[in-house]
Image (cartoon, rainbow, N blue to C red; front, side):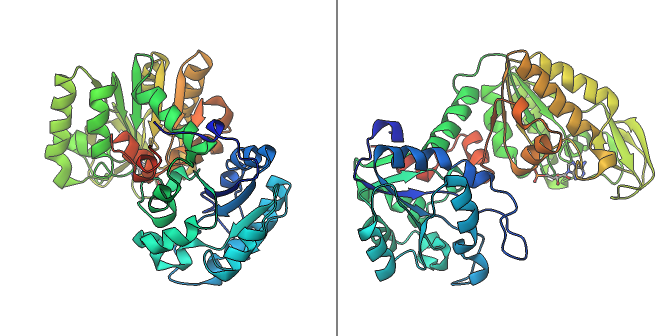
Length: 396
Ligand code: AMP
């Protein structure tokens, strides 16, 4: 069993909290989207309200060694504004300064440590580095779902140093709960909508979901591999020829499990990968040479919406087309609308993965779905049925 922060009272405790502050920055070092900081707020507030102190640690970007461009000092203004507390800052996550500032930290205060990835030892999962981090706090909280699939020092290796004093923060606990609400306790019928560019990156997910859900919609670029594998003409559409056998095997597996796979019946094709390219709508297996499918067509949009509305639990990962371009975004928008409608009718909907989340935000539907996951790779691994190392490390 994993404990959550609600199982503890942090009065007079110094709590080392792994957050995911890997936020986007502009060229001037300003945070352009504070969502990840906002979503860490509840856990920080709980500790402060208990009468504890918080030591925040995170990575930012992919620095190779110390690199000021990736300094977490840049997020201090937004962190201050979001938390309503001005954090202290240690210019290295381990060492004398961090130790002294942690030792002097008072109840109600927040100490932000510099980017963990300035040390190679973080990604390497180095035990002595993890121990130095562990020495800074009395208790450990992991609230970084986005990195929960990595056995890094701060996400996984650090946890055993805290024995019973370790917990999932609200964000991590909510992510686990929401995914459980689909995969374990999902009200039937359950629908998974899988889209995006490549079938190869989502094979494991589709295979696991076949065992768990009633319906799978496959859209986006990956659909064309299924179409070609079944003998359809896909013109210049995206296709992974080496995945065609696997696509056929998936269709067979689904049949054997009584899981219905829904593929597009028509598609918006274009002469180039360009918003202003010439375009037309054609049946799915009849794409002329020299044309490529960049969105699901109108008949498919209606069919997929109908499927969405007939399900009680919906998981959505991956766009239905090249939604970044206005002429190829209708399919993704109509699907998002259908999921919002189904949610309004009482379905539970979970949206995850950078592109699907960007899409619901673009269409102003972020509040119209039940849960938006912060995980990309971590979410996919959970959906593959894997146990994530950071979550396993919180078990007692
Ligand atoms: P993924 O990272 O695999 O989830 O794929 C997301 C990307 O797939 C987005 O950037 C979409 O633009 C792209 N995509 C979706 N449908 C298509 C398509 N039919 N052809 C090419 N790219 C697509």
